[in-house]
Length: 401
Image (tube, rainbow, N blue to C red; front, side):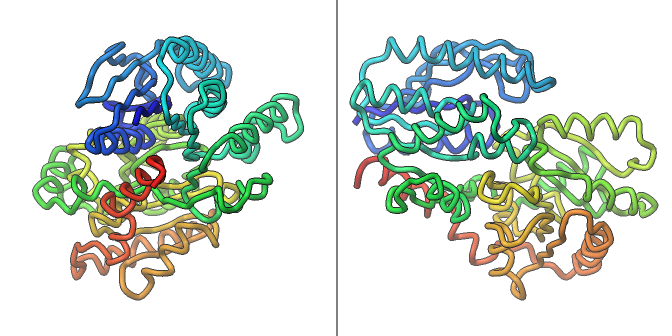
């Protein structure tokens, strides 16, 4: 079969959606299918970095289209980058032969419209893999007014894409409920969570020591937030906890990743003397991810109160794969809180609501006290979210099995 995969990021970009799409593309090629990817030339979080315009990579034909490189500052910058990518991707798609199957993710938000429209014109099967649910996410974040003309247009595009899809792949039951509420038949919406990169990401004692030594973390209790730093994952409560613990020389907060909020934290690190106990590092390459994640003594997962079913913090899965304790800051119920409820009593985990700084500090210090007796071993539930469990399920759906 011939597959066309559309998304703003793909290998070698380190963004999560690009990594998941790369996994799918490689598995499809392994199973004898022809795979074409249309993606962006610019790295998602470092727009000055550009990848080859066209290449055959491990049996996958990759076309990368140019975009403006304004970055993530003002809204108009992001809008210009999105618009230029969509326009140039449309031109590239028009020159490609008919695929039997079209798969789109959700970066940038309107890319599903391209995939749905192309599939309808070419009579291809269309699969919509919803990583972020827009425009609902943008409205919840305050980026769009609920009943503005732009919001109405985007909602129509979202509903069109959902209706055109043969199957919709949602990341959790909360996202599925939001999709069904749009008038989509429940049988059409499948829940397949993101997976951990469990073959590459397991506890790595040597990588842990290398990472800690390289970044001056020897002898420290490391609280780590690793991943996309977006307003939908507000870090105010965690930063307030860092301020309260600034007088404790043994505790260091490590922020790894990128995004608009990461740059704000990086600036605070330089200018705010009450945050002398934090370090900021960029995204780590996948081949070094096990070492960086293993370096944490406590992983933090955050979700904004209004974003249950709209976004899905994938970082929980790799944190579980390295056997690290997890602190969740966010609403309940949610997919993350349900995972932690399953683990409760069998694994070191904790939860706190946004604004409850005292509980966050309390839980950090509790895990620190217990860390000496901790055995770094993934919980049994982590196998439910392994790549070898979930990737074959997703690929089987795409193949129509």
